[in-house]
Image (cartoon, rainbow, N blue to C red; front, side):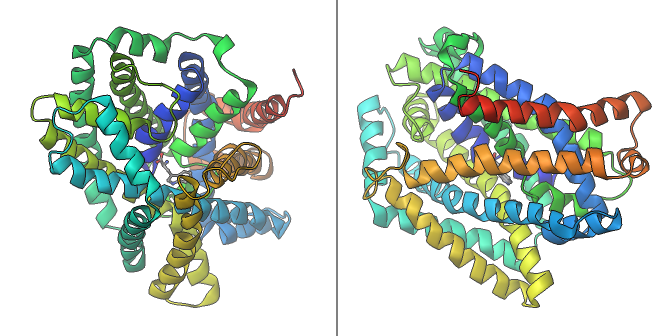
Length: 434
Ligand code: TRP
């Protein structure tokens, strides 16, 4: 449950539609789905397994597992990549979650009732042009995240998630129904599911793979930390599969709800990070009981973001507590403040610094690119290699406890398929094959 809460978040509802839109739709979606099931699920199984055997924060788990099997303690650097990726992701994730909090209030106020594309667009521009407002909501979100982390995570999250994810799901279905009534439904669905491979760049392929890691929360140790709490009698394979299915369903349905609105209103599918914030308010502004559904939707989105955020920072907090001998509260305050500070770079990426780019990317774009497309796949593959090549066969067989056939398939996937696939996608992205 907690891992599902980690997986389902802004990645599904905010990020997936906007990068699918930027990368031409169908072909991107197909590559994404292949990556989820061929690379993502086997790596998730490996990561949960390493966590359940390591039973520590990611850095010390990797060190411990490496030493236990007679390998170099330098494997702890894999934990470091993860801990670093986690708080870098949280630094911008919190800013976007802040947008969602502000939309709770705007939607509740009725400001979007009867709105057209121009009004909604203006509202979004006004919000993102104001660093002060963005910092305010970013601070609120970091505060509510760190409050929970400071108190220790177990318990509460699972209860919240049990109610949260199904509710979010129902609301997305309501939005899909609304999308069906718009003139853009057929075109939106075609955009999502007809794969025209000429529309996707080599970098688009890398982004589809990066998104698969991001959306499943794998490759940085978040799932490893939750694996450490997983009872021995729970099937890792079943849990990983059901997380991947729930996560994919939310993302795909979010796309089906959003793209029809894009086409019905003559908006741009590739308009970037603002996509859901300029489409969904149109739906809520024009459907029956829209202010109610809209407010509820943004509240649930904030909660979904919150249950994801906790898993982004928990590995770092756990490391500090276990190694620096400071209390959970102090560790949370220090790391929360640091993450908040880095988040300011993302705040300014949408206004003051929007023209300061490197390789055509703003600070936010660079941070996202580095973490999602490079650090997570790298971290994930190293976990796969560790689980597939370094761990004793008897150990992984014992942990996974699946049929002989399923085990052989998993081992083949983590040993050969995932490292080769990730390597090919990396090489492809730097232009080796073109
Ligand atoms: N998966 C979450 C989402 O889609 C984000 C997230 C939470 C994450 N924990 C993570 C991404 C760990 C990568 C690694 O919103």
